[in-house]
Amino acid sequence: MFAVEVRDHIMIAHSLPGEVFGPAQGLHGATFVVDVAFFREELDPDNIVVDIGRATDTLKAILKPLNYANLDAHAPFKGKGATTTEFLSRHIFEEMAKAIKAGDLGPHASGLTKLRVTLNESHVARAWCEADLA
Image (tube, rainbow, N blue to C red; front, side, top):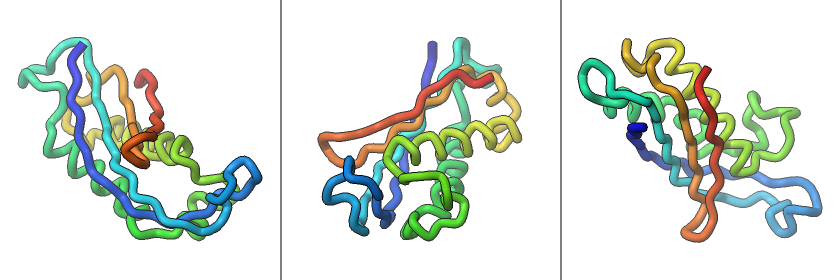
């Protein structure tokens, strides 16, 4: 198995309604370091997992609508529940999977077998969404 990982970050505001979230129920800010790992069984014809430049540009485009946004007011998230770290990792995963399928990461990205999106919310906590690409 081969892998390549790219990184970016976002700064957001949100609140997490529900007793389980304690003080995070109130509006607060967060900075997430976002890592996306691309996996494949064999290297592509160019001897790479995925074009790092295209992967970086695609991640930046996916994160742009979230950066400096109040997620409580972000229309695509209305009615979807709390915008937890896990929720955001799944959202970014789904957007990246769509981009791969659309060919945004190049013609050989269709050979990717798995994707992992990790959101690091501090130096002691992170969450991720990881799954095979169908």
